[in-house]
Each structure stands twice: as structure tokens, then as C-alpha cells.
Amino acid sequence: MSMFFMACGAKAAAKKPEPFLLTVAVTADNLQYGVTPYWNSGGGCVIEWGDGQSTTAANSGTTINHTYTAAGSYTVRVSGDMYRFRASTTNPGAVTFCNGNWSALGSITDGSSMFYNCANMDILVDRLPAGLTSGQSMFNGCKAATLPLASLPDGLTNGSNMFQDCNASLMSIPRLPSGLTGAGYMFYRCRKMTADLDAWAANNPGGWRSLTNCNYMLYGAGSDNSPGTVTGNRSAFQALCPNATFTAAFNNTNTTA
Image 1: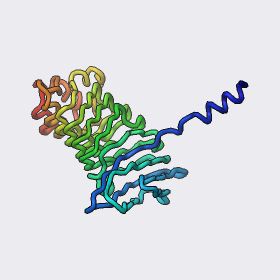
Image 2: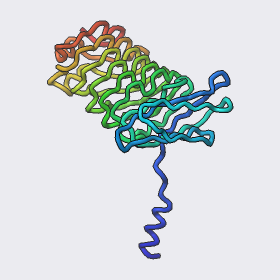
Image 3: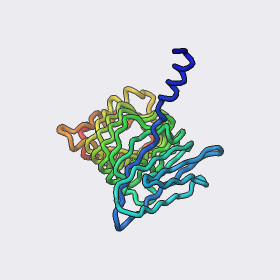
Image 4: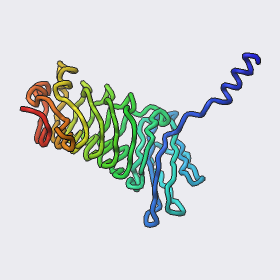
């Protein structure tokens, strides 16, 4: 067989990249689900709703709602070139799963409120979008998300409320991004997470001088594990954040004074 036909056969057999997938379970009392895509010039977004219907978004920053004809579970497929995508604009409680295939969305830099209040959603990813800078309330209220994260993006600056009330999250965070500016309620009541303040300090000896708010940052974090899995010396970490406030930041953790 010639190399030409071998190459053509390989191309024909190549799978299309997997889209960003959401499982949505709508009930008879609320058949609507909606998202909001954001893109820069030249970008766009296509949503396949899982019932044979699809929508090509016309305007960035405009909410797109879809009403299903019957209650049930649907697989929503999203693809495009965006810098931000909100999967929880309308009926966030309907979202039960996400595959976290960030690349299908384009280059996500703003994760603000992406899955806000998706209380029934699970998501199994160990990495977030590489270019993410704002994670404000990205997973806020995602109580069922197991989120086995192994790192945070290096360029993350706003982590305020990012994982608030992610009670089931199994994230293990070895280092905190050096440019972080806001971390209030960042890991609030993430009761199954793991983190070590001493490792954070060792990985960034220059400290976090731009960080201003650490209030309730790790309140209750790691407390469902025995012993608690948020550890390390509070004073040493606080010394590296000279401009930050720390109201109740370490309450109910296994950290030391």
C-alpha cells in the first residue's frame, strides 16, 4: 500500500476532538437550561442541546436558553473559541456532570461563575485551563464535585470564592500561584481537600505581596479527613502575605500557630 493511501486512511480514521460535554437532567417543573458564552473578535460558540436541536450563538455575553419538551437527562455539547463560558446561567441545579475538556471551548482565561451553584454536578479533572487568570466563584456551591485537582494555573490572580462549599472536592494543592491577589473564601469548607502551608511557603519564598484578602480562605478545609489534611504553620505563611487580612482563615483546620 502506498504511503499516500496510508496517510489518507489515517486521516479518515482520526477521531474528531471531543467537545466540552455537560450532562443536564431537567425535570417537569423546570424544563429550561441556559448558558452564556463570551468571545473576542473572530470567536464564537455552538451548543448542541442533546435533543436534536442546536444553537449557534450570535452575540458574545448574551444568555442562550433552551427549553426541552420532556423531562430527562441530556448530553449538551459545546464547542467554540471563547475566553469565558458560563455553564450555570439558567437552572444550574440541572447540571450533573461535566467532562472538563477545556480546549474545546477555546482559550479560557476568565472562569468567573462558570459553574456557580451547580450543586449536583460532578467533574473529574486534575487541571484547570492553563491560561486561567480569574477563578472568582468558578466552582462556588458545587457541593458534589469531586474535583481531583493536582494544581492551580500559574497565572491565576483572583481566587476569591473559587471553591467555596466544594464539600466533596478531593483536590490536593501543592503550591499557591505567586501572583494571587484575592483569596477570600477560596477553599471555604472544602472538607476533603489537602494542602500544606509549609509547602506553599517553600515553593514561593518571595511571598504574596499583592494578596490583600485571605478572610475565611481555608475555613474548615480538610476537616472531614482524620487527621485534618490542611496542615502547616499559620504564622510563617501569614508573614509571607504582609498586606492580607486573615479573619477566620484557618478555623477548623489542622494547621498550627
